[in-house]
Image (tube, rainbow, N blue to C red; front, side, top):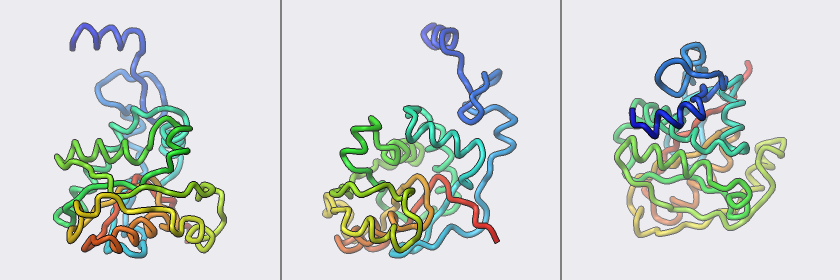
Amino acid sequence: MSVLSWLLDLLYPPKCVLCRKLLTGKGPVCPHCMDKLPEFDGAAPSVRFTSGGAVSFFYEGQLRESFLRFKFGGSAFYAQTYGAWMAHTIRDRLAGKYDVLTWAPVSRARKRKRGYDQSALLCREIGTQLRLEPIQTLRKIKDPPAQSTLADAAQRRANVSGAYRAEQPERFAGKRVLIIDDIVTTGATLAECSRTLLQAGASDVVYAAFAAPRIQD
């Protein structure tokens, strides 16, 4: 450990990304939380205009609270941990199914308000882990109400209709695109992004999301 790292740990003791208790060992998550990670099992949610996808976790409990701190609370550094977890899922479930790595972007207004685009941060870390440079293939040209404020799938689809524009289509034309998003609920955002990419020349689209709600039987 360098002197600088030692001093930083002394001044700002590392805390668990999930429960925020002080860490006594190595790694970003304490053993208790690691054992209780709500890993996503089963098939990923079906999303229109994609040929498949992968989800890392169920969106619940301390993981959900942790993610809200990442997305809205300024904890941008969580992307390093989340992105590494997502890269593991991608290697396991989507290997050989993509050529290009990209993300579902937020609007400029939302990025300015938060200080960063959370999906872009996740994508950057995933790219580091997979040794694949991310490409910005989409720009959000509208700033509609947040999807989480809308009650049903039809409203969410209408809310994002025409919200994205393809960027640098020559870099993904005829290629298979892996698009990164944070939370997949109805899949409306990912579907609109994927539709835009296919219309601009992508040969196929698959997705990876950090988490999805647990569907109650």
